[in-house]
Image (cartoon, rainbow, N blue to C red; front, top):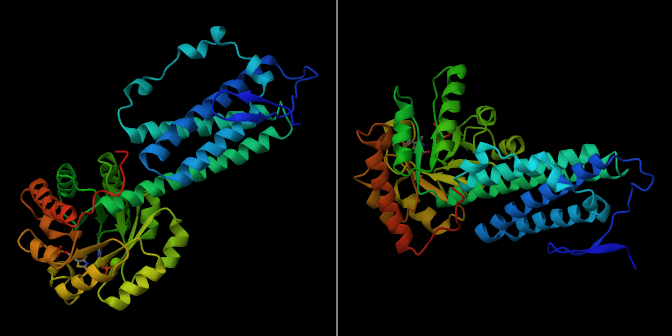
Length: 376
Ligand SMILES: Cc1ncc(COP(=O)(O)OP(=O)(O)O)c(N)n1
Ligand SMILES: Cc1nc(C(=O)O)sc1CCOP(=O)(O)O
Ligand SMILES: [Mg+2]
């Protein structure tokens, strides 16, 4: 029979990693460090796992957390546990002010990913002094946690896309930041930075400011046309047109967890965008618009087609405003994207709220409740 012990923290029988301190070569302090960080990493993982399981209902993510916890448990042998000396540990009294102030789920989860990654790094370094395989085992686990974090963020991002009904595409304006902030205050959850004629240095600065602002409001931030800018500011993704980089190339550059949107004007473009892996598509122009004067209207007919055939979320775009939104909705749209209707509005918050209220009515009528809970 294999050696091991029974772990009370739900892991059941844990095969024991061979004791390695038999010749008394490892200082007791090293064992205490390993013991404390094994606990820290497992606790952090458990906090993340609970959200993946009960908040997101995501079996794959919660399964990976559980597996990592179980692997950590196999290293937490009685010798390391016996080294624990809580009463004389000065660290038990120390709490960071941010730990007391954490009020939202997003920062709680981010803090716990950091906590797990730090603990694994400590285990990797000190573990080398304890067991010949400990360093590489924890290095490998740390990389698995980075992947888990990126999958987790990608999943949340895609859920947020599904929940977004209104999409603001920006145009250059002196007061753009305050306009966008007013719309975010009205409930906007998706913004695209679109700016064709500004110098790159200024574009980068604008994209950085907008990205920060959107993330402060827990809204998604995408960049029009430019994968490099999107990467530079850590945006949530890009929007590409038929003349821009192919989706496949953008995907290679951005990785699997960022959002890629694609403009379409007809059934053939829709088909290609979907086959290429677009996360959402633009459907338009619904009406002729001075914002994109060179593109003839595809009309409500194409909106009706998208309503019947698009397997991915789609946003009707082009000439949509508060006066015609209900015609677009009647043609089957559940999501819309606008430029002038918000950027040029006297009261961007009110206009945003109006659009969202009309679109929410359709979601309720079509019996499409939110697909998943948000952590924001
Ligand atoms: C949501 C959304 N849909 C369509 C477009 C248009 O993209 P594109 O055809 O590449 O034209 P430009 O915006 O680059 O002029 C969009 N930006 N957003
Ligand atoms: C940027 C853009 N793309 C379109 C497309 O159909 O691909 S229509 C459009 C402009 C939309 O601006 P407004 O809301 O001011 O009419
Ligand atoms: Mg483009």
